[in-house]
Structures are given as structure tokens and as C-alpha cells.
Amino acid sequence: MSATSPSAPAPVLVLVPGVTGAPADGGAAFHVADATVPQLSVTDLVATRGDGIFETIGAFDGTPVNVGPHLARLARSAEMVDLPAPDLGVLADAVDAVIAAHEPVAELSVRVMYTRGIEGAGEPTCWIHARVSDDWSPYRAGMKVAALDRGLPTSAPATSPWLLAGAKTLSYAVNMAAVREAKRRGAADVLFVSSDGYALEGPTSTLLVRRGDTFLTTPVSAGVLAGTSVQTLFAWLREQQGLATGEELMTLDDVAASDGAWLLSSTRLAAPIAQLDDRELPTDPELTARFERVLKGGI
Ligand code: PLP
Image (cartoon, rainbow, N blue to C red):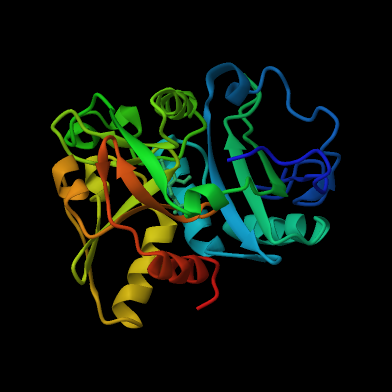
């Protein structure tokens, strides 16, 4: 993935002081702000503790995909970390506003950020940031993935809910460290594995596996994020293609012996796993291209 080029259209920022109700100063629930000047306090608990949650929504040719499911997941994450419930109507309007204020581009990445706010203030901070998406095309063509131990069993969400498995928190340093380790191993991305030996998810993506006419993903109860992309594909596979979908704990051998595997997310779309460590997997460029169209909201 190459970084956004310096000549790319400028990112757009929308501040959302009304995320939990009307702002105290009687101002608007959200407004466009200058993305090129500092806006976040150094004492915001997201800066000092990584204490916040987020969502990344893909917008294709100006149309955001799965806004409702993303905001519902934000509300679930908020509940898991004891943040006040966000006003999802305000956020949906603010997402539209950030996209409208951005120059038209093919692929936009819209991040909704919601933090515990300035230490001692007791008020959350919320903003939405839109920028041209990273170039995911090399990933969509098929990638090598390194399997990395996450160091936790699939029972961790039940025994240790304070680890926040399944919440989309802003403490992604571990996820990013895993991607750097994968790159040191000559791979493009990671498939996390539980300490009891099951394939989980990528650091920013959901695992999809094909076994014949059945498509499978990791159960959310194993400690993975409930992906919006996999739910979109599952609905399409069942309702439009008459195929079976399900959740199943799978070992790395299961994934390697499958009829195809992908890492899915709202901005990368469907990236086939062409190689898992030293094992090659079959790829299906035509099916991947259809997945891409579905995930862009096209079918
Ligand atoms: N799993 C993790 C840990 C993620 O961070 C993401 C997205 O960023 C996903 C899965 C994929 O979720 P979605 O398909 O909703 O983008």
C-alpha cells in the first residue's frame, strides 16, 4: 500500500460537538473545520491513553457504504468502553457533510473518531476525517499473509472482557506492530492466530474462507471485530447466489487447504490471500472482482 500522494485532494475535517446532544454553547451539532491546523488537545485521553473508539467507512464515487452498520458498531464499542451513547442521527448527517465537503474522488476513507475527551472535563471528543483512501490495488490483486500468534485463546472474550476484544478501540499500536512484523517476514499483511490454534482476523480486516459452495468466517465470540464487509458479502452470497454462509473456528491448516481465502474491510474491500506463510492458496480473480463490486455497494 503506498501512501496518499502529496498532490491528492486535501483531507476534510468535521468536528461534532453535538455527538451526545445539543452543544452547551448552543452552536451547531457539527461543522466543517480546518484540517491543516491543530484541533486536538494534548490532554485528550485519546492522546495520553489511546482511550477512544473509531469507525472507518468507505465511500465510493461519493457514496458511503454501510453507514448504518458502522454507526451501530460504534454504538456497541461505546457501550463496551463505557462512553456515552453517540447520537447516530447527528453522526450520519456529519458523515454526509464530510463527504460533500471533500473533492469528488473514487475512493474516500471516512474515519469517525470518538474519544473520552480532555482529562477531567468529562465530555467526549468527536470528529470525522475524510481523506483519499490508501492504494489497496496491490492487495486486491492477491497478497502474501503471515500468520502471527495473538497470544490469547478464543475463550478470552468470555474470561477477560476488559481486554475489549471485538471493540474497535483507538489502541491499534499492537495491530500496526503486527503489520510491521509481517513486512519483516516478506508478507503484506497478517492473519492473527489464537493461542489455542484458530485463525482469527487481520489487524484491520476480517477473514473469509471458501469451502466449496460454503463461505465461512471466524465467530465473533472468538474475539474478532464483527465486520460489516463480511455481513454484506454473506447477505449477497445467500440471497443473490443461493450459497451457504456461516461462522466456524478454523485452524491454519483449514485455511491453507480451503478453496480460497480473503481479508475483507470497508476500504480495502476483498484482498485474496494468495500465500499463507509458505503455503499457496487458490485465487479466483473473477469472484474477487464481483466481491469488490458488491462491497462498493454496486450490486
Ligand atoms: N477486524 C478489524 C480488527 C478491523 O480493524 C476491521 C476494520 O478496520 C475489520 C475487521 C473489518 O471491518 P469492516 O468490514 O467493518 O471494515
